[in-house]
Image (cartoon, rainbow, N blue to C red; front, top):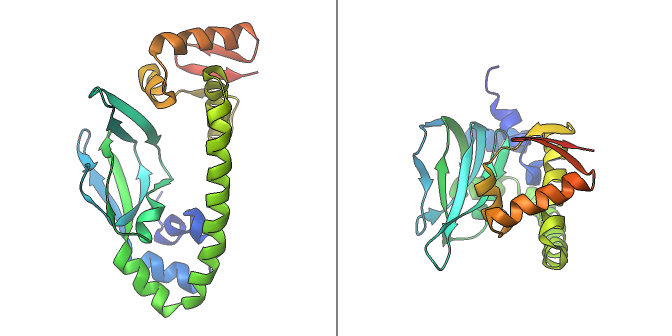
Length: 214
């Protein structure tokens, strides 16, 4: 299916509900479908963080290094997922690394182009304040909740999020189990134990990397 710049911009949560002329203006100043080969870095620690990024196809791994120099996968970006929304509003450097784990196409909107559109449509800036306020409140509540959860609960919540993303109770794990353990901040051995407990509690069925939420 042909790439639609309008639909590409519309999927960004902070732009949902924006007037059509604003979406068209943002789509016009965005860069679409840049091809990234497997293994290529999209950004590294210290690079300017000056653009919102949309994964049009493929997968991107965002990772950092722990104090003991071990790589830690923070999250995976899949097709139609958006990253770095905050880059549209602040000037700072990347703290993490992002790498394509398969042939990937990305679209992006640079901060300076975005701000030029806001100058033309100042009413959009006011609506963004409300959207960002709601997002910050949600993130703060989630951070508090996550600190109180056990590793098994964090794992189960992650699997429930995947169920929602894939809109199916059965799905393939989009990362390796090692990457998942790093993302959850636990060891692979702990991950294996918690998966066995979830199976024993009849919450999930597991067949290698295929999960079913019961």
